[in-house]
Length: 75
Image: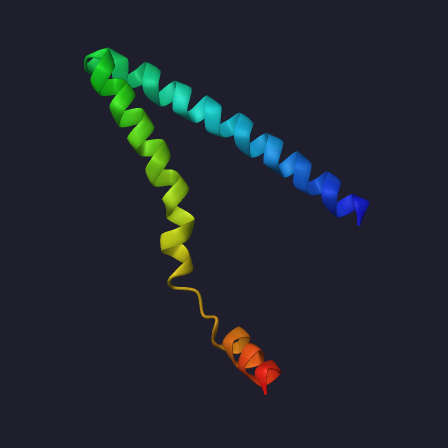
């Protein structure tokens, strides 16, 4: 199990690294075309929407098999 933990930690650190780099790039580009307060607002709105994307995606997952297993375990 330690290998999975190490892999998860590497994945998490790389995701945070690329996320910060992407948002920094977006903020820099937007500050060239709009006022700074609007650029900040748009960047943080984009970040918030990005955190909600997996939630929206999860609504379309086919989880009928898991539901059936849970129902069988109840009885």
